[in-house]
Length: 453
Image (cartoon, rainbow, N blue to C red; front, top):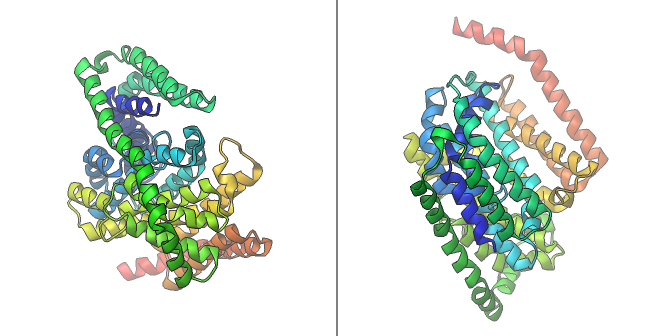
């Protein structure tokens, strides 16, 4: 019954979702400096929610967003990096989750919507981390607001069909209707509302093309789901998971944090060059049982491995999404991969944090603890990004960047330890660093002006 959901997602592209989200990104970019990146952040993330494929998403939206970013002052490597990281974020966002949500649900024999909802807050944290990094870079380069003309006609015409059908599907899934029922009702609403799009009304050929695109995604998913049984049996018969866990246990001390770090490295390595669903499937069969033996709950273990399987698409040496983005931006592959890691590296904290803060996976149930964990994670990622980019209000010295890195470490350690002393140290160190930079900003500005003259 999940196949209709994928066809629904493909038909959204067919009725004009791509131009809609690009225009929405332009509109948002008019409110912030460096706003030319927002068509990529918003457009690629929302398109990725229904495509679920980072590389194809990069090629599809990057043709529009990368030239726009370069035109407004972003360097080619950084423009390509924004696009491929934003496209990667679509694999974390419901409803498709890079197809892996369906595989996780099949593995754990739970409802698909439980997986999708569990992924929501970590996905928003990922997007938040990307936005933070882009805004810091934009400020450091002195980039201005988005100046492209927003086609409000496109938004007015296309938004009702997209929002009406999308929200309906989400509500039905939250009410625990089957994915097939939710998708079929969503398709019906989408087709009816698309008739009201005027000159942007999709023709029959476009809708058939969208349906074919959905089938192209469904076929490999069917094969992957069929392969779970035989591959799992092979892993059990050969004791592959047991052997791998023995190797990790012998290399690493019996410490959950270090073992998770080893799992991260193996997940990224095994995902090198593989499509995300395949990479996740391999990791799930070999590493998830090991994490479960250590006391990590089933869903948390699978989500941890899934996240780093996704990160493999932007991690060297292959970083296939970066290769696609570099071709579009006419930048270098290594430069794009480096900038992608600089943007995404703070988000590598998220899987570790939700292992020790499971309330982040309990959406739509929101508690004050979940909200605090969300905010505290954003704070830690912000300080980490400041250290990586070396900019906050002004260029930072090496010593100041080291101080920011220490603050980020304290924030991360607090999220894993929940010590009030660590929280106080994190807040105090961060406040001292911010105040120091603010009070010395004029001094550095004067020194820079004198150097220029």
